[in-house]
Length: 180
Image (cartoon, rainbow, N blue to C red):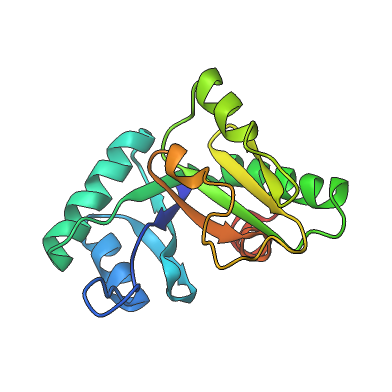
């Protein structure tokens, strides 16, 4: 069996999209995945599966979540090897950019085209920039970026289906679940 990490998008953001981590664990187990674990209440799940298709795993989980909750829950899945690489890139970018105010990692359902990457990375300014590596886009935000905007670079809407975690959570999950 292979181990995977799933990241749920847009849950626990108000009274209508509540999905406690114990319910997530139960639903993931109900579709046959094993050794299920969750981390904090933001939709981080580790599990084992005999399935080998990331897209099939995502579809299976999304159908189960929608049936259980009554709303869509976009789900982004990584193998442990893929996630270890995201964590490695996160550390590398942190080391190369000392003094960041924030480093958010957007986990992407699909890889972006070269044109999309150029547009996203081209939005860099004094507030920071985005660096895209495979299915991860790193928002590297400089001190002073905070002007009340959730997406100060206006790039998040260009990423397709994605969910973000801060660099610390990426590192914690890689260490806890991927041995990185």
